[in-house]
Length: 126
Length: 360
Image (cartoon, rainbow over all chains, first blue to last red; front, side, top):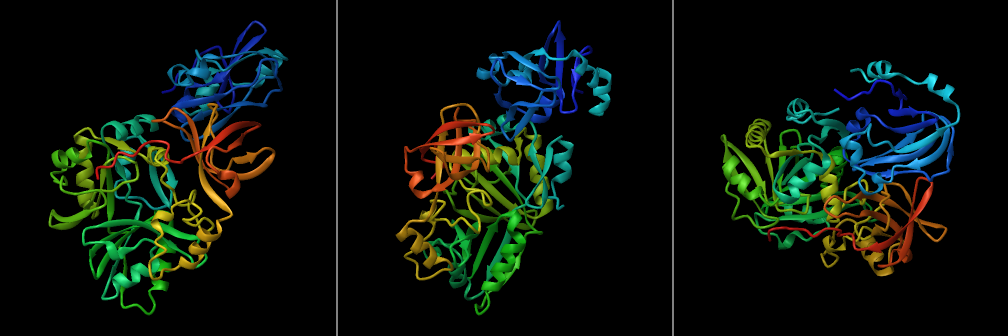
């Protein structure tokens, strides 16, 4: 059974958003990391890049395949998780602790269109 | 979708299953990295029952196999195995395969799963006028590949098969539960190892013994990373009707001094004149991973595409095999690979990224 954390927002493409004030931490869910297998590379954007909700902002790669990353919410990249550059496998160890980008949210109202923990659990059929 | 006789076992083990070559095959069990390392460092077992087997018998078997096969079977003794290709007259590859010499009048061919129908049709067509019998035994045979430095010990201790006398690319047949099985010192991982061909019941029993002994089951995921790191081609990626073995720099397995074989003239011409394209190795300086189909550039010009690429597991580098314009493919040339929106520098290297450890 995948780990799912209450209080986060979830997308149908298996990203989560953890909101702190006007910032949103975006990463992939535990379910997603499990489906991917060993993560060997994370393609991250630059600080200052701007994205709209649904935009592709990078990719997370397992041995076998590359999966696009889509941000569930729009905003400006304030920080990328540089630890993933040296150790992408951190995502397998704890996908929720190891967020990928920190966004300054453009419109907190966009969060309303995302799933909560309970809805996401149903979505992945667990 | 076809299933191997071990399909239920894979599902019960919780393997990630995916279609390959018309079969529903296990891609991974514990994970590609763990399985890959088991084979490099200890031992792992693969269900490769999807592979096809064709037996050629008859007084003209030797002459006929030499006609459709690029390698020179004249030098084979009974009990030898050879690797090579079947080609179209234009040099394009029908398939790459292993040929086992049973005796002068009997050869056992091992072909790729995805190509079974095509190959059998091709082999039958070309056999017109030769006094041979072509028998597609793909449904009868299941196959296990036991690979890794501890493979010999595993065969002996777990399966009671003493294969210590086998040298690289040789085989023997033996009785197992009243059935004749084939054991060869061959594989597709760059490590020492064996391939065992037998009927379904024998293979199922062997699989169960290997699992009970704690041998790591390995999926096609790590089979691909293992073969890639040592520069072995995969039909469909590095060989195809459009890619001849000369283009794939596998000329060693194409014996142009042989009297005749289908595709010989085309290969001789490609070798003499230089083929337009060439398969090369690429090493990236960054960690970004080149994948099948990504563009390879020289300056702003697209000069080819990636055929297979990985972040190496035994080699901590981002690597690719790529089919590029001949001039662009010179060793040490600086090229680049387009990965999503960015372009990453790459240098042309030998495509044996990791050293093979065969027991010769």
